[in-house]
Amino acid sequence: MGSIPFAACNKINGKSEYGRVIRRHRTDTIGRAPNNSSPRRTDGSVRTMTAVAAESDPLARLAALPGVTDSVTAARTSVDTLLRHRVMRRDSAKVTAEASLRTARASAALEGYDIGLDGLRTHLARDPSTPTADAGESIKVTLGAVRLYAELGTLHSAWERAPRQALARMHMLVARGLIADADLGRPRAADRSGPEALDTTHPADPLGLGPAPAPGETAARLGGLTELLLARTTAPAIIVAAIVEGELLAVRPFGRFDGIVARAAGRLVLISRGLDPKAVTATDVGHVEAAQASADDYAGAARAYTAAGADGVGRWIIHYARALELGARESLAVCEAIARTN
Image (cartoon, rainbow, N blue to C red):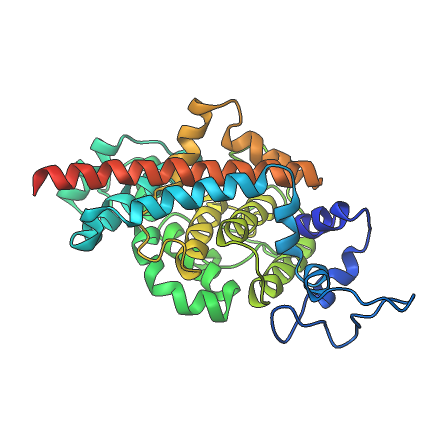
């Protein structure tokens, strides 16, 4: 199976050229043709620079999928409305803290470890750093998610420079104390063994996505995703974040808690690319709420993405944009609550 977003891009143009997409999308500047291509067609006509850029920017081509542009625009409008709220001028740190707590709890719930927000607050008020000895796994995983989301801001530069290292750090933050230390931040590999080693052939699958790619394919797809992130693109941050989260959900690079890492990585894209610089949207809450607002639930959209077709990728991006829109509305309600207490 090829890397899903690249396959989707190719299907838009009716082509099948996955093996060349990564090499072709590298450019020196946005809109400049790659060194090994020319803006002139074989028939003597000249292609526009926009057309050349589209060929070398597979993420940008995903905007052409039906419904994607409208969904992305609606989500962006909701985020902009949130960022303009008067509370953001003086109390944005409070909004960030509350949004991070809510989205971390929702992310753990999507992974199958669901505890109530009030129960989480009670535990944090008693012991904000570690679970008690008799705490169940749900609280331990949720605290790991809280720890990860609280540290996302410190991973900004690492993510921009070396995404795979940042992903390893994310896994260490969420899984510390839950798996063997030797497995923290280590991608699945076929040669792992020992009584405490993770099952690399059957990683956790809370969303019912089906069999994960083999470790070798996972490594290749992570490499492709990294190259894509380090290349220039004109794609909106929402599309980039959706593809990052969807691809990490699909490949399940670590074997456990991959969904939490994937959702945190998507959030980090929104932060680092300037859409949500203060990390105030609660996108994962939106993932949970989307199922209540429509029939397109998170797991179903993720399964559509893993099917590798352009329609499935488009459905996933639309779902992600809708979740972001709902998450922005959740944080807008937080702003209103803070305003009433001032």
